[in-house]
Length: 494
Ligand SMILES: Cc1cc2nc3c(=O)[nH]c(=O)nc-3n(C[C@H](O)[C@H](O)[C@H](O)COP(=O)(O)OP(=O)(O)OC[C@H]3O[C@@H](n4cnc5c(N)ncnc54)[C@H](O)[C@@H]3O)c2cc1C
Ligand code: SF4
Image 1 (cartoon, protein in one colour):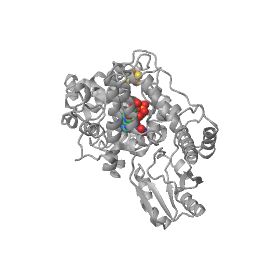
Image 2 (cartoon, rainbow, N blue to C red):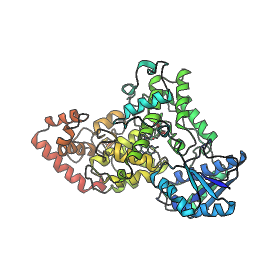
Image 3 (cartoon, rainbow, N blue to C red):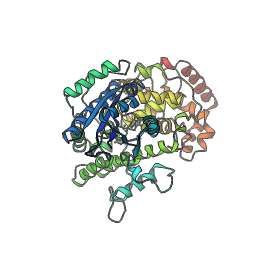
Image 4 (cartoon, rainbow, N blue to C red):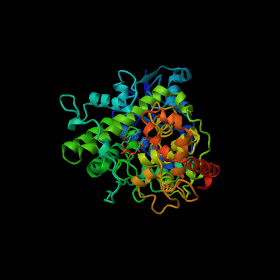
């Protein structure tokens, strides 16, 4: 009996658990999946180029590999099985809900035995929490204990603290940011770029300038470059935003780990090695490890715990349409114009811009959560439902009623001004709350507090922020309400 192994485009693991010398491998370029949404062309290029390079690397290792372009996955699998005489199929469980559901139906559709292997791309699949965690922090500590990362032999955290967040909140000071490594497209990648332009004309952005890693060796080189050149400053400037530096000291490794070119544990081990070698301080290394085995794994865990209902949450009952400028970057709000412009061009902005600009505005302005979620899914090179939906609907918009993040992440211009250089030179005044020049973040922030005062006061993690309301006179509250009404009636014109 010949049993084929189907490897998905986001499961390009060098040690894929299903690989077997006797088993043909099939990778399917499904046109239906590629066109499911108008994804960013850089993301589509990354996936196609990485799949094709992965296939070539497997062939070099002696595997029989079938890369098949098909209208959809099932047609591709049928054609493959007929061509290779396969009478069975194996695949690793997909990270995303709908694809896993499709995998579970395959046996009935293909009329052959289908074996679903456990997903091994996430540590939490190996180490499920003993009891459902309420917060990320205890979840993270449990993951540290399982992996032994940054632990003394006694089981206590190295340095005596689990978390160095308090040291990691500096404004960018203009120091040199090492340029990102560029990976010149080879013939396979150039063909992938051409295919994306041909087959996905409605996709977002352009393939021009694509220089991302597409092989395992290039992904390891990108990890090494980050660890050697940017990790040391990652921690202190983790929350900083800059008009001149889009990536700052972030790793830009999410697109790679999300498709299996890197594994979460090896990323953390490389960072810990840098700490042991004296290349990076503990606060930076712990901050990075927390993002990877803390936040990333926590989001995946919550996604599977809350699906499929997570998709539809809207606890603040928000229904405003997404302003048009999310699709053009043409707004007088300087911070939003920069962040959106980068996303539309490169498919990337770093975490704080996603959270404290793009989602913060969405929550304060009452944007329909599913519309903003779709925007994130379509615009980013690292976007997959398992990571976008809990981050956007849970952490960013608090639309899940506070399950994923226990407080809404909202802020006025004073936070943005403190953490960035955006406000200098902006059309709006970061100090004003009302009036034509007032920064919209301010008006909307104070309006949000006024409107939801009772609900916010009841939240122990947010209550203190509401106390500022006592300084607002009745007339100021009226002015905030009136100015908000004006802003909300013309969101496209900001
Ligand atoms: C609204 C919103 C949308 C997001 N959308 C995505 C997305 O589409 N894809 C995606 O991979 N991440 C997403 N994130 C999480 C995080 O912003 C990105 O992983 C990170 O910005 C990727 O850039 P980086 O590799 O330079 O990250 P770094 O800052 O260098 O962090 C290191 C790694 O930690 C992981 N990480 C950090 N925070 C998170 C998190 N909250 N959730 C999951 N992983 C995390 C990533 O794998 C990242 O590569 C989103 C966060 C928010 C708030
Ligand atoms: S003033 Fe307001 S809109 Fe302008 S950059 Fe600052 S926070 Fe953004």
